[in-house]
Image 1: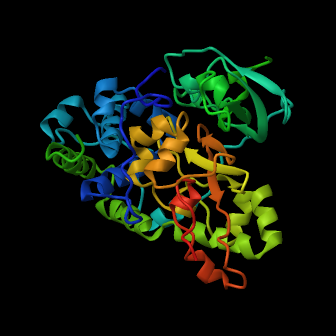
Image 2 (image 1 turned 30 degrees about the vertical axis):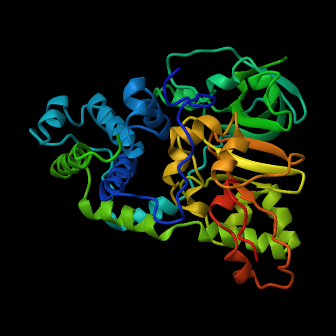
Length: 219
Length: 192
């Protein structure tokens, strides 16, 4: 979707506020928010793509004025309501008003380390051969789906070159909506900055994205 | 924005709801919090330092980063599919996730706030030299910049150039030069 999360190329946010190395959280609520998102993700009622879609579906004004983990917690609330696990009324009143539903899995404290260390690859076997090879020129589609996609706006309808082939991966556009994994070949596609941003762009700059095969067509 | 009093309260209330409904155990949340306090860019620094001293390891890292990183015991969530890109005098790599905050957790820990900020995500792909200036970095004009926007589950690690004057240094001393930002592309290893 064309949501506020799709930030590449926007202007007006000012300089990057650099911080020294240190703990990634600035407040305890951020730690709890992050942990809740992981624990509820482990329950298995939605996947990572559905979580990302819930975040990017926040109204643009709200997305851009929320702290990052605030976006996560708002999206978690939306997912809990959409899946019938918590009601909007309970969220508004900030208390549980009825017994919980049956979760597919409740994460046990003793299982946390193993869960976080587990490798859960997104690569899947597919029968079809990859349509493109490294070095091929491709053009990204001009597409504006209302659902989830990982093709950023700045890289739509642009011509680039296949730089890497990553194997076939779960397609977020489908997986986010519970419509199945539909794995497709995944490529790194490199674009000259002049292709993305016009003749005035820095000629020494290029940008690559990782793009699923259905995002691409022959140039 | 950010840390007004409403948000901590909202988060606290949600945790209480989830606990009361039996969806999460507080001790499981504690365990997740604790697990990520331990993970940080020191893991990635070990990978980079090894690649500086061991040419065969460097080769394996550039060909199959996921396996090479696993050799040192690192891997897991948000590091399932790793790609290492190497800086040279000719090309400098910079990593961003314009759409969210994709970041290689097992080697760098959780991302710093600036990595998730609209300022970084919006500008890294259109004005990376300006972003690098915010970090106090000026590259030679002849150095090309290749930006990698992490739009899939591939996670990128920048292998910075080994600083001059470090010949013969042991691996653990070299690892101390490798900063978090140098592995994202917004920094350089600290001068020897």
